[in-house]
Length: 605
Image 1 (cartoon, helix red, strand yellow):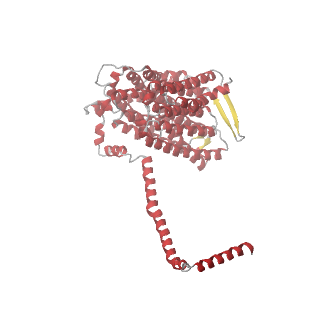
Image 2 (cartoon, rainbow, N blue to C red):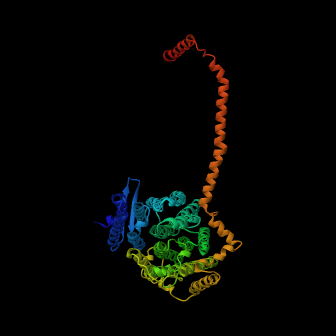
Image 3 (tube, rainbow, N blue to C red):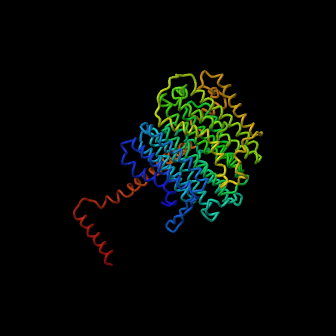
């Protein structure tokens, strides 16, 4: 089997398994979980066979209209290594957790479809095929959310509408890009400042790619989905694959497709910083652990967007490294939460007090992931955040650096609260847990700690996509500088902020609850809780208002006009039409003869 065919197997095998094989065993949930794992293993084997050889690139002509182009470079192989790791851990976790899913066939089938779509997005060099795979992923996301049961339908629709709206913006942006650049290549380096059309194309594509990653204002479905989705589903899609795809394409947009100017950077900074704070501040007072993790899955997107906005090697590399680190530790955390809430009977922080003591292995995995979540050395989170800071400072945007620094402090405070709850006072008698549920947590937790070492070894890979000066550029992060001091101060100030708030709370879960009493911030948080700032909810209300206006004003008016016409017609025509109908046979016979004469005249004359 040649390399071209092997390269397509990660796309083909999951799709065939999802569409043709899993339905045969639809009544046996454990069987379809094993088949899903087998599909991932076969795909991974094909990928490893190709990745072990030279770079692959080929094209398939399609109906003489365009060519489907695919390639596997060192950089793409590095990305796919993480994608396969996430999916493999998801498949293993599902062996023990699939019985908790309301619709297991729908869930596993579309997790595989999403996996295939993610591989297609990364492997293709054709923007049109990328767009097709992008939309397939959106449909898969809708189905996976819907598989959670009856209460998930509204959230699934919300994700579909928001995702579809942002994808529509991206399609418009691609149409402009094709027209301005004159082709479908991903490496046109089109100057954003060249024309209004170029800037508009960039803006639309930026919004579309950012929305996939969870950027403001397209992020509001994520906390809702975290509450209803199976833990494995959220870990597989919103926490990992969606972040990878969104930031990956945003990197292509901001570095390969376009050459940014200062106006484009300001736009990216604005969206990035807003994303950080609209998610991390509510996370301080959130009482549901699933929503806390969802909100802290949104705020890092702001850091990544800011890093890409710098157009500096350090900033862009930091964004890409943060993307992979975040996907690793967040998947680990959601796998752990799936076990925590099963034993505690829910995901409220107050009910999870000391739960890590009952499930020490999963608690350990969560703790390891915590080190990457707060960017402690030697994790990849530390390297990534330090590089983002360096890129922002090199560009001279000190206010942006200050805002990101404050956001990182708040992130530290949030996770200190979570750890205080999970490892707080509680029962110390461990309870047994299935190996299929514990292993993915430990593997990803260890992986999150080792990301710094992995990135250092893989430093040459980034030379293929970024103009790095030397192979040891990542190792250069490990030196003392003002930025390093600023990074370490995050831990100090974040911990101090937590302990100051904890001293005023009766229990760890109530830390920062006093913020709800703030005259300004408390009122804002309450309005946010009521979804007063949710663009989707606002849009639904506007649509309902317009529909009601049309029904009450225009449709009723049309009915009234129609009724008036009918009444008027009856009044004028009633007497005229009634007169000829006198009830006598001779009159009706006369009308028949007249009618026949008229018809004959029309036919023969």
